[in-house]
Length: 378
Image 1 (cartoon, rainbow, N blue to C red):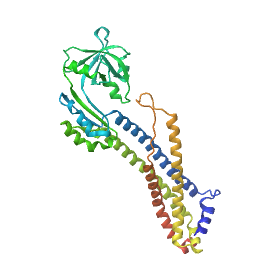
Image 2: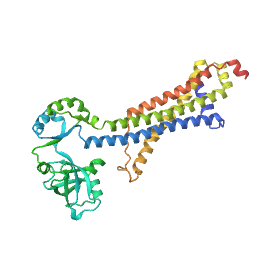
Image 3: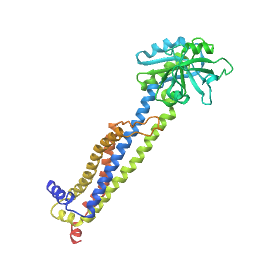
Image 4: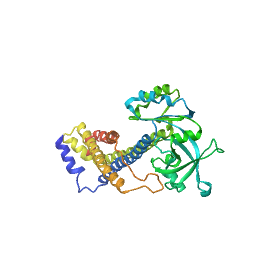
């Protein structure tokens, strides 16, 4: 078998002197599979990178277990119980007061851009009489450090305002937070709203966000209020990420499937053109199974070589693009992160090779069924 395969490869498949249309069809099949694998790996690396960056950013900034509701003064006493329940698995446990309000400049300095709807969050880390504002909010209102501003509760618009000065501009890398959130001293906010040790938001972050389900019911029971996991809070967002990845995977599947058809066409043309040679090889002693394996190996060779080249070229090109290309400034984040899912890439390679074998199967079987007498007579 090795003698016949070596003769076949040297005189037919790899012959640089061959100028037949079949040779170009082989080249077309090779390029088709290569481009399919190359595009799939590139697209999924960028998509997974953007999704992974977004996921890590949200899980880093947002709570993993969350309760928000009406202002209550009985929950503060339960903080120690929740911390003991979570133990070393807790990264942070925050019981805070949060309410909606309006941020405005004093009347003497006001203009048509000086009122913004905001979410006021109590934070013991903020000094009394000060406030921290997000960078998008600061940019939109043209705020400067030390500037005096006034907060008004939307529930008490006729009441007195809370005057605070800007001491810090923070960036969470999440647009909605940077645009809407204002952090003020917890005690200042409680006193202004007329409460003591008030809580309207319980935000818990775990060291491992994937463990939220095993703590959800226990934390809800300890607090006496229903808490939600990060999956439930942003359910539509996480679903859209899965749907986006699924849709892209299905699209790229059809690209690979079409590329495998090029392999089928190339081998079918080769079998049709080489009918006399196949019959001659059979007459010289090559068995049907050997003829079948000969053409099947040709399809595997085309598919395997193109897949290997695609797997080599895609990371190189993707890395160059990631380092040298940036999205337009209209996007909140302009970098192009990469994420290499080794398991998915391995499955992709195996699946692509199976498609190439499947595409080669029928032409190889047709070559095997070539009759010696009719082939030589033709």
